[in-house]
Each structure stands twice: as structure tokens, then as C-alpha cells.
Length: 284
Image (cartoon, rainbow, N blue to C red; front, side, top):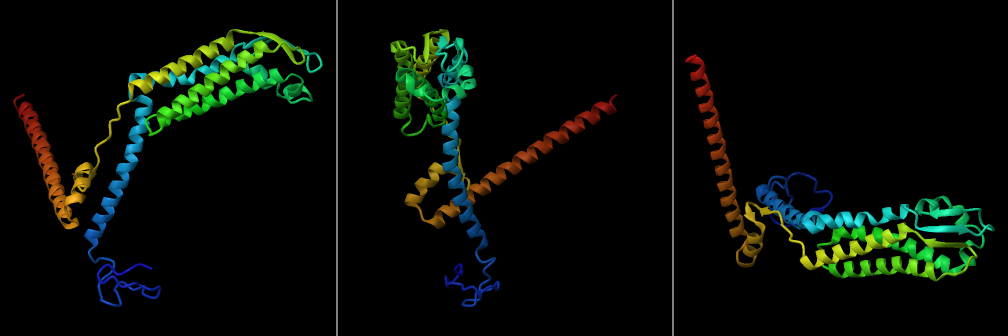
């Protein structure tokens, strides 16, 4: 159970009535305004920390022109895989196939890839296919890491993920070219794989350019009881809670008076406009 807000005595389960059994204070309404102000302070500080995360997330995507370009260059590489990546023929023992291979072809041939001996007959071909799929997974991870581009370890993550993606992409092509076996597939690289590599390089270049340039983060101004939160944190170091509360009341009062003055000004302007319209109608 809770404690009495006045005397601090611990309330038991049977102390369910509105008044404290020790001091008689009305537990519900005692010092209610101060307790609401304390809860409001906590909520506004929590909102400030959440708002900082939102501001960093927003800056990661549209914080600069290069950041916007990075979204595009990070998104398009995988589409090159839907173009012909290699041209050749499959060993007849697995399937009767000859022509261009794209990611769609690989997807449609999952049953053939999973057949006995396909992944074990030619280790280099399997390694090449595995590196290609790994590069796609790393591309996906890189795309989602853009959301953390303004966080503490963003630069290190960008260097690692781009390096691994490029190694996997170029490694896949290098292993495929080095494979001279015809146990599974015989063929040559096509335009799609070269375009895929070029787009991965472009993605990395733009990513590193964003890292070098940096992204300015514009934080939305937050307040605690009418006081800018940065000033509020400084006040906590030099002022008591009572002094801060009095300053909050003073500023909130000033804000309310300012809003009331604006409302009165708008009403006066509307009234004058109405009178001008009526006078114009009367004059014909």
C-alpha cells in the first residue's frame, strides 16, 4: 500500500477510507496541486528524453540533403538482383535449365536447390550463392541501421556493415568466376550482378560521405512547468524544489496572461472587422 502524503505513515490494506487513520488528513485531496505538479514535471522530463530520440530518428532520414540521398542509394541495390545475374546452364542431373538467372529464378528453383547433392556437389558454387544471400541480409540490416545513424556508435556500425556487405558482394562474384567446375552450374556473370556491385559501392560511398559531413540534429524545445528544460536542469543544481516551483508558477502565469492578451487582441480585431463590414453595408 501507499504512505500518507501528510504524516508519511504506511497505510495497510484495511486503511481503505478517504482519511488517514493516523493524522486524519484527507488522503485524496491533501496537497493535490503539488502532487499533480510533481507528476507533470516527471512526465515532461520523460517526454524530453523521448523527444530527443524522435529528433535523432528524424535527422537520420531527412537531417541533410545527403541523408535523403542515402535513403535512395540504400534502398535500390537489391532491385538489381531481379535482373539477369548470370547466364548458363544447370547440370541435367538436377534440372533441365539453360538461360539467365535472377533472384526470381533462384526463388522459383528452391526445390531444385534443396535437392540431394545440389549444395554439396560444388562447394565453390555453394559458397558463391551463400555469399550473395549474405550480402542481401547485410543490405537489409544496413537499411534498418539508418534509423540509428545519429546514435552514439553509428559511425563504427556504418564502417563495419558497409565493409562486410562489399566483401560478401564482391566475394560472391570472385568465387563464381574462380569456379571452373560443371558439377552444378556452368555459366558467366551477367549485367545484373555488376549493377548490383556498382550500387553497393555507391551506397557505401554515400554512407561514408554522410558520416564525414555529419548530420545536424535540431531538438524540439521542451519545457517543464513553463521553464525551458535545459534551464530547469541547471536550476535543480542551485535552487531548492520550493524555489523552482515558485518560478514555475510565475512563468506559467506569465504564459497564461500572454495568451489571454492574444485572445483579447484577436477578438478586438474581429469586432472591428465586423463593425467595418456593417458600416460598409449601411453606406450602401
